[in-house]
Image (cartoon, rainbow, N blue to C red):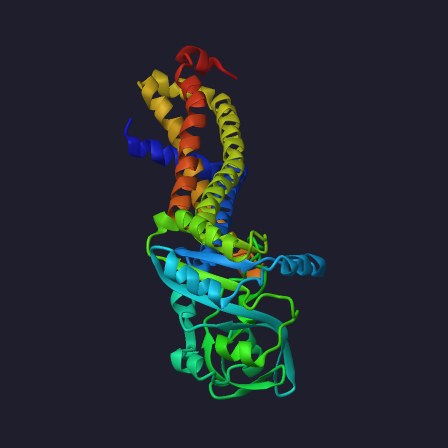
Length: 412
């Protein structure tokens, strides 16, 4: 029998029993859709995590002031540690090998005002090297430079969120905003950043889009500290020219700071690159688990195909006997029923792919979950559906081929 004839008979069988065929396909449809949706959610989460750590700079070492209670802070100061300082940053720049840039930053949580609007924000005093160290992009205007820093100019750069709140499509460049009792000119707006929703070491979870950046020289001169005992600066970011030396360099930095801080535990060291590698590994395992759970639906769909095909063989026993008696071989019978099960799985797989893509888009559209569909997830889901069709269609096809023509013709 020609293979084309097998395909025709298989499709004819699906058309003749539309409702039964559709019910048989449901397992495959839900399975394929689940695999694509689950993997797209996992991939979206992975990309968000990677973007988050890239924002911190994958070749950076971040030293943060530790959050201490007032009693702990008094105890540390009594032991001669003044906390993180610009002097610490200068020593690290001079001593640690492979250092490309060092940026200091001070922070203060306060209100930022424009006209009658007020927004809670983190005001960050930075040095001009900050933009080169971090994966930040300027959307409008320009960033703080050496001139602003050296002359302590009253300028600021707004995060995308706070700019949208204040100006709503208007050009913010040149406008004045009030921070504490200081009026600052807006010279730039940063591109939107991924929400930093996890706390990593001493890196507090917050919306980076509501941050405001000012020259560190201006910050230290014009803004009062939240706590008089707090450090001069809250963070030092060190960029190393070779990512393979990050761990070694962090140990050297730790030894330097221990001496400068008289062995007080008032700082923490975070290596975004190491966190990124760990996150990627965890997300990979997470994606595999999601895919495996979703693939169970495909196995259930395969069992449904085998069940229906076994019933179909029983139902068409006389037809099989007649075909065998007029010359059809066992391989022809097997081919017909395998083709029918594959047709069910392919049709269900294609429908499942469309539903999976639509579900992924709907999840992104109506929730805060970001999804990303990779071609390999569609390929894996669809290929698995075809394999399921062949595998679970084989036993019914073999049973059909092994029926004796005489007994089959007499079957009622």
